[in-house]
Image (tube, rainbow, N blue to C red; front, top):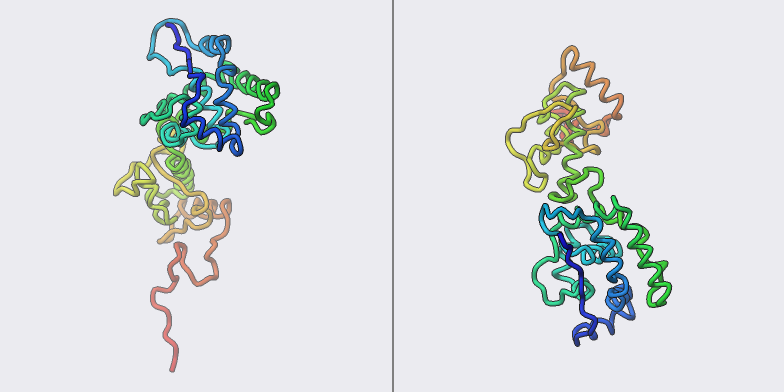
Amino acid sequence: MAIERWQPRTSYTKQEEALLRRLRKARRLFAFLRDHRGELFDDGFQVELAAMYRDTGAGAEPVVPALMAMALLLQSYHGVSDHEAVELTVVDLRWQMVMDRLGCDEPAFAQSTLVAFRDRLIRNDMDRRLLERTVELARRTKAFDWRKLPKDLRVAIDSSPLEGAGRVEDTINLLGHAARKVVLCAADLLGWPFEKVATAAGIPVLLGSSVKKGPRHRVERPGCQGSSSRHAVAPDRVAGSVAPQQAPRGDERAAAQGAHRNVGADPHAGSGAGPIGGRQDAHPPRSRS
């Protein structure tokens, strides 16, 4: 399967000239990449990028590798997430100019495509090769301070702890998955149902399939080991705030005491407030006249 090569224009449109007059004073990397993209991604380097793919003809045709590599440079320079990088190929004229896509109203690629390309680039050590070429070109042309170039393309990854999950979910939901695992472990220690721990901790939002959608009425409680990431947690709320509404018996009492020793003291102790922020006395004594 022949990999398509990127062949951006070498001439400048009036719109590009107007943009470059501003970008040569600030955010000069955009001007540098627009002026020298043909040198950076010459035929020889594009052959190296194409060599990362198997020549079997199987699978979907990849997005032009040089275009994807340029997007990773811009993403690392801006320090934005994968989702925002996709959006910037539509809404940011600077990105569109550098990627030779001025006037396009559709994204240059999907978020999953960007994640997969970065993984492929890193597996083949081509991320270092790309950065080395960019630094060498900046030094030689003196068109941009090479010391201000990104040091690592991996800083753009915002979902590395859950490998692959960033292809389909954003950071908020990924944090929700991690929080659910903490609550699951706390529930096992206390011998409580998952829903009870989440509710007692004041985080019912974790009962839903997505923290953005909010809680749902019923949730299965998988075990702590090997459990699905669809269920709950909030570390800062679990610490010392998961107190039973009714005193546990037997093993439950021992588990609850052990969990409190490990996690920390009740932050509401001695404050006149209950474990979830309410008053301890349902009927406070009346003052004597």
